Image (cartoon, rainbow, N blue to C red):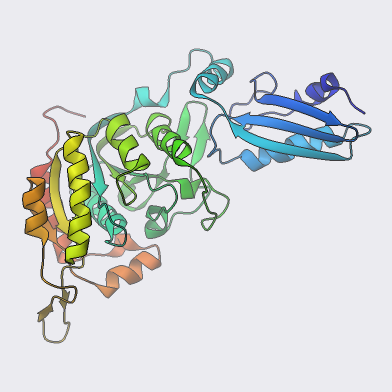
Length: 354
């Protein structure tokens, strides 16, 4: 039966692939329990979303299992507190600046709906493309941790985010749009992220503080539906300059979206505009418009938000097809440029060079 000292000795040969120091020295080995020929080890990661967590777990198992008398090794992964993480990063690279110190963002805009199914992520992607085509540097922070859609729309896959001692390097989508999403960190895009509110909030803050966004004109934050933890974290923890509200024509959707508007007002976040998605369907044969989801309520929502209606986007099968194929960047609907112009007018950049 190995001793704890022997186990720590072999674990000192396990190197964190990102920080390039051994996990004992970094303080990642939180607990060791020996029960006869079975060993239980708790390893604290700097982030629960660590893309190389499985590699670390496998290396720990292999190192300890090589000890005489060990039959089984159980590895439990946990997450460091903010204080522990800061101390660990200091050990790895003393005096190394944080990623956030290198970031310079002109405007941070939360895209919210309050209700699911209104096409908020599609609107976020289309707005990002419209702004990028107008010459702006754009990023998307996908704050929908449990239901991320942005990577799928742009054809991005797990593994396209790279770790760096100073932070994460975001994936680069079409039009040089920078993207950070939990779906770029999980082993497979269908892997469920089953986290409670505090973990979700922590991940969102890390996506802001520990991602090397660099210089951006606009950072769009794609919020999940609702007015709970994730939305509250973004509104209170990130220096948000405004919110874009997405709705659909149904009165039910408009009613729920008004809750998101009320939340933004209570938190003193201005609404920069309202976008009504799936507003109508235009028949390709006759050109006639059909309001298949009922009459528009966009202006009513905009009035309640003390904002303007930036665009009414149609139901377009081509948009759905391209989104499903991960090629939303190929969409060239005529209204997209108008959306970009309207948004630019309502949310201009600060009067300074970025």
